[in-house]
Image 1: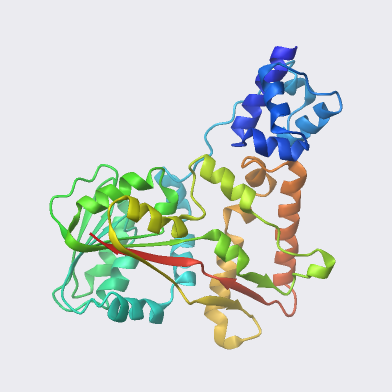
Image 2: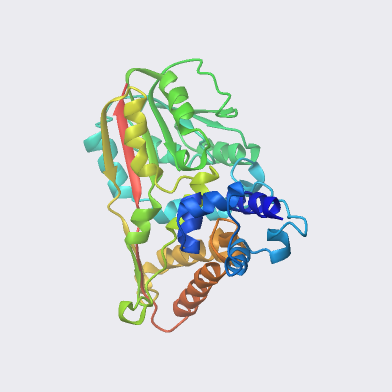
Length: 365
């Protein structure tokens, strides 16, 4: 039986993307103890069997190897087009929630000083949102090329640009397989690097697409910054009503290479490693204020609610959190918080503040 327990503990831990140290903290034992359990040196004390079973959300019989273990499939969603197609409308609206028109205009004109015609290439252009934002501000004579694999996104991008005077071209291509045929003045990406498995490889591909002296501009988020910059009238520190910390969930996503919640802050380091010069960072100054009592903010209020209530973590309930390593009781805490927040948003005078956490990372080749 000792051998069965050893194997099940290790496999259940790894399925959930947990390290031995993380499991030890949850069990309130040393990580050496976890190692001994997994290697069959020692058996868990009888009082730890129910704790382990509860933590892994399995029966004691499964933990002890008396019943077969259910094999979990890869829960990463972002490699296929189905997830993006299902959530197409959400991502469109989500981008507008975080976007700050006047700040972006300031970057283009006063920081990057793009006062001359340029050729711009976007990796993972989607429906052309970022390309359109650039072309509206770039001088006449500029040209835009977008790379996107999904046909529906490309069709929408073509429609978006069709009635404009902007010179453009779209390439139906997997960004991992793209081989540059020419060099561009500027290479950009929006919300791409957080979601790909191999950001260093993508940066090298972007580098190969740039002219000497060209500029790379990567726009991405840091969810820790967003979390720290969030407040609602529901939060009552004195009553223990603070927003729960989601870091353990995001760290599990990083372990499974689903997405990297700190990518915005990591990008300067990755660009420096790739050989770029003069690496700089700006953070959007937009802070979202949700106040349904303010009728002038009607559109932004509606966008905020739509995005909040369509997040995977809100829609999928406890299963979203347990599969990412949260214990069952912790998962229920998250779900309860979302429920209380929705009830609060449905109350007579809701109010919330949310920082965008949007990083603009740029450098020269």
